[in-house]
Length: 86
Image (tube, rainbow, N blue to C red; front, top):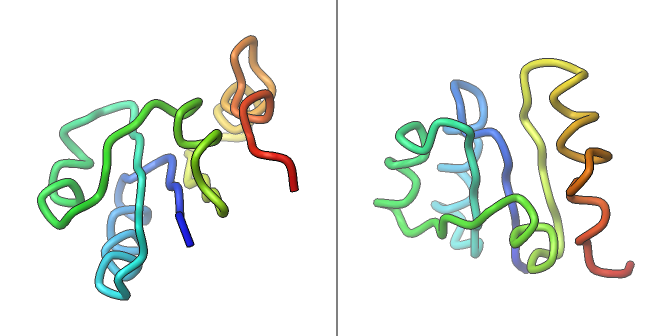
């Protein structure tokens, strides 16, 4: 199963580490790329939100504010436009 994660800050980072430790294929994105560096060192793949949405079977968002979620999902190039069917 391919898993995507958008938002690898304080909470997202530790949750992503659990997924990587469980041997899941993980693609990540964060507005501040430096915050995802520990995950990349553990084997995660860095992709844009749109690339993640098109690739993964399951996608998690760990964003700070409702407006961030709305923009990420429904914005001009939001991820819902790129997700696989099903």
